[in-house]
Length: 434
View 1 (cartoon, rainbow, N blue to C red):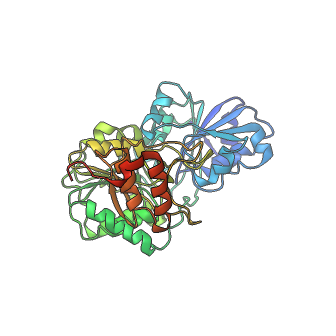
View 2 (view 1 turned 135 degrees about the vertical axis):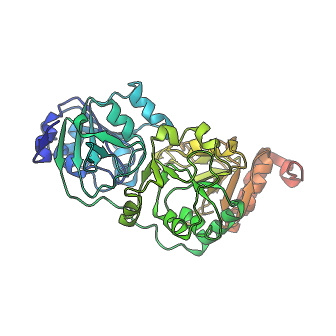
View 3 (view 1 turned 90 degrees about the horizontal axis):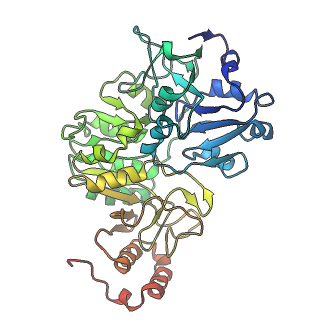
């Protein structure tokens, strides 16, 4: 282990032809990355591997792309153009399985660039707000290079890395990247939140993401009691429920009383909240997203969204046609875990139309679109127009239920498409048991 005065000196340990892991989310190590990319004219055949990241990575420049190729495990908005161009690509993979890619050397790592808290009196630094797959990367990379930052929260759980494990580090004092606020919750999102809240009972265990719809759902749960949290990510949307005392975790079977997550993305207020708070357990994504672990909690609510959903219930949430938009992530991990949980409910919640007014409920997915959640896994679909319950329904019954929650402007076209596909069965829809 050696301390360097500058990131440029520390990055001299990196050589051409190596695969380099980049710590993600709010732990994106921008100081180290800038120093690495500054060697673009010198290094060759470099591969960067990362989950989601925050901030401008500087990968758009042609000189950088001649030296570095981005192999992205999830496509955040700051790398979307790179991944869909000649400078990058995407690995479709469940979040729960990414640590295994490093462990079994399917993706062997030469170097990991990490963003850590300062060491405690025992010499242990913390992976802070991003344990997720970084723990496995730190375990498997041959060389660890870190930026150590007093602004990185020290989180409880599995994110400890001893300073002696580092091959090089540099001290920085940089603000953590923050995710922009999702904006005000509009009336349509409020209606979705209200519909979802009616499905969620007291003592449920929540998995939610970031964005206006998750925030709307969480806002609608203000009067709920004894909620638990077991989620791959924490965002600012949880803060209100925590402060109200609605989240106690008292009835969770796994880690009762604790908020379990693998990473946090949001504002500085969130980062300060999780700092040195044992109520939060930041754990490896392989564990957090394990279906058996998820299902062991009662009444798991998996709340996820979609880009589009077809009339049979196939969910596309990672691409717009052939253009990669995000990734598989943990949606399927939690949708299946919730479905198998005692009293659990997997929910897909989305606005019924795009910003341009097109329907998100479609006769067929666009050519090239990826199916992230299969129609066999979908139970509840929620739009501002209501709730469609698809479990146990056949194909034409699913179509009828989804058309009923589509935007009224598109229902006639959807009914025509459904009739062309299913014929007279669409005229006498009867759900099982009704």
